[in-house]
Amino acid sequence: MSSPPIAVPELAAVRQELATTDYALVHLLATRARLIREVARVKAEKALPSFDREREGAHLDDLLAKAEGAGVAGDLVRDIFGRLFAASRLEQRRFLQARGEHFKIGIIGGTQGMGAFLARVFTGGGFEVDSMGLDQGASAVEVASRNDVVIVAVPIDVTDAIVRAVAPHLKPGTCLMDVTSIKRAPLQAMLDAAPTNVDVVGTHPMFGPHGVDFDRQKVVLCRGRGEAAFARVKKLYESFGAETLEASAEEHDAQMALIQVLVHEKTMVLGSVLERLKANLGRSLQFASPIYRTELAMIGRMFSQRAELYADILTVNPEAARLSHVFEQEAAHFARAVAMSDRDSVVKRFREVAGYMKEFATWAKKQSDAILDDLVRHG
Image 1 (cartoon, helix red, strand yellow):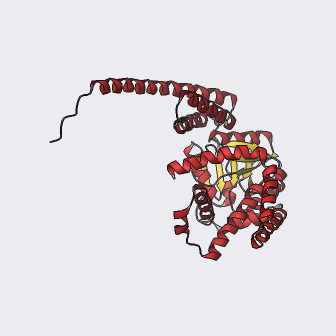
Image 2 (tube, rainbow, N blue to C red):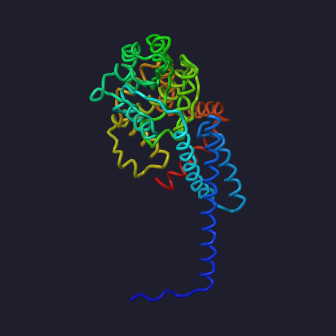
Image 3 (cartoon, helix red, strand yellow):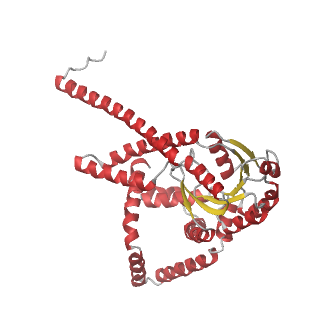
């Protein structure tokens, strides 16, 4: 038999005080939840998004400063309030979805990839969703003709053809939108092919088909035709937690050349080099720092997906060739320096880039430190 616990009066008193403090925390959480519902009500009335990145970031910085002054670990505060903020955003999204406008959504290409993800998210939010794909559902023309918002979610290389096939069958007042990672050509195709009594919005969800909804994710919106439709689509994305950003199709494609083409080409080259070397990736991970593990994870993530998706991203964007040429020149510069053991050349170029990034680097260091700290603790 086990021995009975030893009574320690001093410990019992501290535990009682600790329990009382915990109960008080629970009551404070209940108060916070009530206040969040009030925030959600006001946001719904004022048509405000559920997620405000600037406000949330500033509030967390303030809390971390107060934690430091109180002798509380910043990691603990970041973890606790990260969960609280997530719960708050979810409460607001549910409120906005319940109180918001509901309409019929048709998704062409809604059985796989991003289309299937959108169908699942919108259905979960109470929308009537009508999806079709190559392997199931009604025809694309049928789906296009009977819904209020029609989303074209097919690969980039067939988007133009699908748009031109279905657009003439849209009913007056319909909103036609796409989700491709380039905007000039698809937006122009929708404007050209759709009747003038059909509204057009170009959209680009800047994330992959995973997660519960669009919480904290960015969506770029490009105006096509129809103010009411633009506002409807913006509100739709924001009610599911997205942070929307408006841009012209030209600016979008130029930014994607930096954000997607340049980054994905770099990642593809790294993966290609690893394959050429037949590197033992498992063994490499055993030596890996958090930064290298993250880099390798991103390489592996790319090569777990469809080759056609990345081929389109690299070859369809009209800005891609120019950026790829600059990438090639810079890679060649460093390759020559390495081949010649030219340390001075590497230092010189490094310092030039560091000077260009001086202000940005302050933010980048803070951001990457938070990511690496999280990887160390949870990775």
